[in-house]
Length: 477
Image 1 (tube, rainbow, N blue to C red):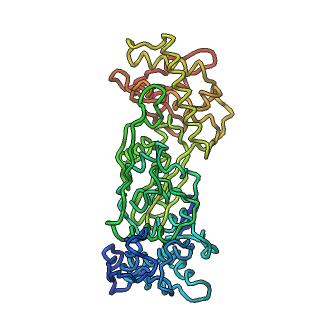
Image 2: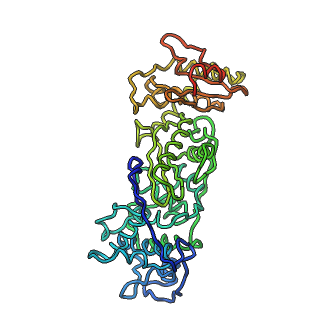
Image 3: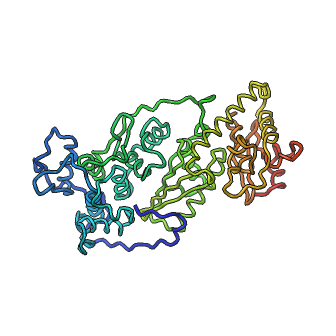
């Protein structure tokens, strides 16, 4: 896939693509088994692993095997060979012929695979990241990267089970957010092109791929009947007390691939957060660079309303097929965001337990009374960080719990976390320079500003449980 950072989106140029008039343009129906396999590969028998897949490669016109009459089932596949197969699949989809697309990019010397690579680059499937490595053995992660954007609109038949299994850290455990091409690897699972290599769905991203294993992934792209569903048993984790996670505090949302309104974006963001994920993949057909930026900004704005989750930064990539991938983090933490989120939740749970054990919180209290206890604790245990820069840790609740310092989004994130631990419905509301809490206390909507309630020498309760009109008078939105 040709990926660009969002800062470079506005420089993207559109490619003018033409389809021969006699071909079926952009059609899955172009994939037809036009041949019958009857032992053409001498090293392939019905007892061979991946027999159905290798035979399908032949029948779909994707491989004629080697000159010696073998397929090379157990041999390692090179990056160039993966690119050739991907180029043929793309060309069949686009033109109805495996070689018509790449033919325009051949010649000029170099390996045969170079023409297929240039074709995929022209199509926006790949960038220059594989230049110079065509002769090298392909890793399984590289195969995932090459295949992830060859065909548009592959149905996400395993999306929910993969999201839940991966988020539970019980499945696909050898793939993390720092694994090369991890988003493409997960895409293979979501579309049924792979279910891994063992009962936990391990992908072995750095391992060299055999030609047999590659055939399995390739043919599942063109033949829905060959796609797989993982047989994973997803056990429920505890949902109360110290077993609770930040994901448990988010009402599950529906996955909407192309949210067009704030309400739909909220559904998609809640789908991500409730799945304990920091990555949201969306699909907008024909999206422009400006529109991609707008999607990114809208998603980040919605995510910030869940500021207790500690996400206040987003990294965006997109491709010409319209696939947008948003990866959220805390701007000050980057790769350490997950660790700090866990520590934040642990600290909040410990404080909640302490307040209940000390009798400051009791079962007979109203929601307003409980919310006031937490308001007091926040104001008495935090100091405003006047030195905080844009990427300061004071913008997330971790700083309040660990350092005793925060700015408004850190205050609000910590407070909203407390309220949600008590099953009190709340969100964050922001204007151009400030953010505070809107909560439903005993059926009444109120605004609560812990930041402004924290004065130097006392707790100012005038900013607790304000009516919307009172809040508007203090900070319009």
